[in-house]
Amino acid sequence: MLTKLKQLFSAGTSQPTTRHKRQSSVKRARPLVEARSEDIDSFIKAVYHADAKGHSPWVLKDKSVLETLRRALEFTVHRGLWLQRDEGKVAHWQGRLLALRHGDGPPLGMVLACRPDDEAAWQLRFFYISQEWKGSGHGTRLLMAVRRSLSGVPLQTRLPLVCHSAIDSLEAAGFTRQYVDAFEVASYEAPAKWDE
Image 1: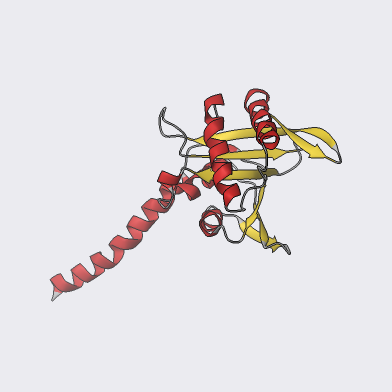
Image 2: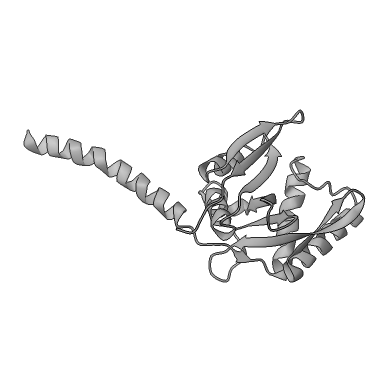
């Protein structure tokens, strides 16, 4: 009888311990690394994939839009500036193209973050996880790593409500929904995260 009770109690406690270990490994996600020039192609491929579903912030309707996006990404990688259209002019915002990497291989996922100045929140313009790594928690890992990499500043992003897995990853990483506009695009924000 005592043995059965002991088994019941030990079986009941083993599951939370496993869950706790998984959560703590996500919380300790290492910061992202700066993307390399050769990573731009995989970023654009992910934008194409999102655009085909109508989920991209850029509409890649012709070659000139694609070339403009490529030049803007190259400028971000080399200069740390994102070229942002602002009232008919081009503004130079702070920009970072960050990659989630395992060793020296290709990126598992990437994120483009930009902001107009040091006082503003970082805006996550686009983020993705490579197709072969989807469904294994890497989306949450990427977003937790973004919060750590850009610590001390709130983060904001917008995405269509139909992007269910991206929304699940955002919420698991500590982002909260602010509002939904008439086009079914949700705005999310995460408070500033400080180094622990």
